[in-house]
Length: 345
Length: 131
Image (cartoon, rainbow over the protein chains, first blue to last red):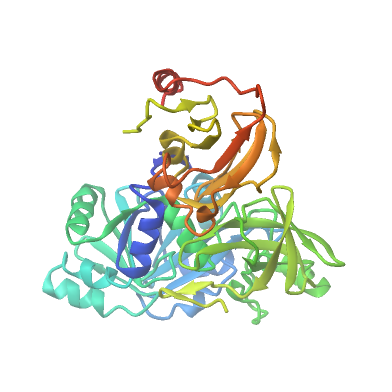
């Protein structure tokens, strides 16, 4: 068990490698109840989210849609990354990180107040992520016929309410699957029923290696309040084409864009034997140094991979100082793995 | 439950040492050490001929969670490192006292060792460490 944002959570239930492979090949279930669920209600909720998020809430046109994006501070630093679900015209749901929960809520309330938007923390809900090629079909067997139909009809990155549950086709593993938000009282029973249907219990360790292979950032490792989206591989989540969008942090990002981002976040593939770890130094020929922000062993690839923040002009060939030895690594596109298949050549 | 064969000696830093009939020794990490590390994914063993001092880092074991140094319990020369581990680090998890050995050492005459514990003493140490 480890402390994670104030929650006691298991790193693994059995073998972390076996949990990882179960998600790539069949299905695994993660208890992600540490994530914060925050509902926003109010006639000006959409206008509020326009200000709060660097991604464009206008992309959510149909209830049930979901959008990934960042909350920025005035200097363009990332306060948190989150998913927003469009529930109804005056109603949205945010899923935020555990470690930033208290500061996020304070930030959200401070601005929501101006828009008359009600902020409601849903501590009555647990959250389970069921991920893997068999995840959706297996989860559907827990639902009524009508509910199963609705769940299986969901498009990627869409969600719907099914009885007392909220079922989203989202995740953090690079596999298909659902994230379920359900009453706390249901969670233990559902966990057991998933286990009895062959879904493997998975801990934080497998969650980390799966998201690393999937090329997904972890808040606190790969970005924080001192880094901006352009140096965090998150430019795709910043919508600033329309000059009318005045979200918090926009002016700072415009200044950064005008000067050009000095750093970039890239994927690294270790070409020598060994394991890349967070905080190791990356040597970039002629340009200086960078840092590994997340690293480890990639069970699907059977080699080590990492994310690294490097000088923006860095080329493909770099070296990493691994326990005093310089090992060769190659800059590659993220993700490394998607839907069980290696994308690394 | 972790297991500690009575014919081996143990160190406070969780290595085991087996003295063979010819006086040479095999070294590995204990069952409780491999269990604490979790699934091993990379093992680096020393080259043959390297001379080790007792207490010197002589190998690296890396699991999904972390990297750890292994310390030589004895002063001597490396006869061979376990080459199988390069392709199968999981042998250290599966058979820590057998196929998962790390290095084979020829102790120097009258060689120094680190403090060596019996199986019973090692188990007591683990209890005091709250394992």
